[in-house]
Length: 336
Image 1 (tube, rainbow, N blue to C red):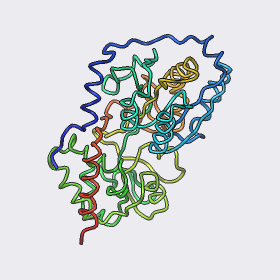
Image 2: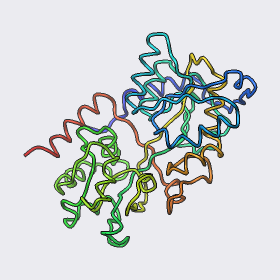
Image 3: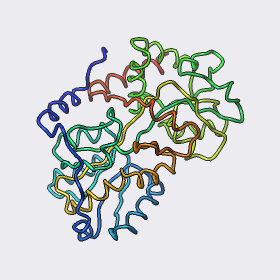
Image 4: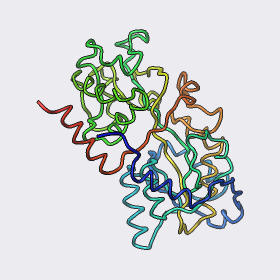
């Protein structure tokens, strides 16, 4: 399967050309937002990681946050179901780029560019102002610091193919986990046409396959494996002997916020988004290990300031490409 631009990404480009190409930050009417009294948010971030952000938003503006959390798939299913039934209950949606793009193309979002987002790195901005990036999930190699010294850990993704790591690596099953499949697919950005050979070589290392990126870190901490591929933020979010490898570039998954096109409380929704992407809000979410886009704001992870400028946003395969990748990875990792 040759690498091609995802079908819905092409459609999104066409959408952009018909939209607002040079959007400028829009000031929020705080007084009108306060009259809304609450804001309903559907998102993918665990509630405890959003607690400080929501507590401070409520204290500052006297607007209650009603937050419902689910996986990116669950968020899309709930929001789309409500939208198609003509009864959207959400004011704001937060999820991954691929899910947000699909909902955007369905007309579910209203244009809003928060002023604070104007300072974000250009490679993460959306020109149509329908979705706003607010956190990024860079991926690296994590390792057990009790089993390995820093100079003993792999220095690059390619180092994982060294025979000494055979049976000592954990990764999510790419035939079932879409983010890992996307990560491998995007290795073309780093390795060119050799990315498939790399994946085949990794399969020969007999990695411990888990259901998603999250279980990789506990497996490392418990010593079930010595290294694994996972989000860097897990170094902060899991307690135990784990650190990450500094790479030249980091394939990264952007997450976005958007205002509902039929939001019952649009002013509160705009204010919530602006607060979340402001330096104040970004510092709050970063404290839990999240990498954010506000200039000069970093999570309390050693070397985080060197990760941020080297993050590369991942492209998303189309639905047909994703199915093809799943079948291909099943053959690579499970065929006898």
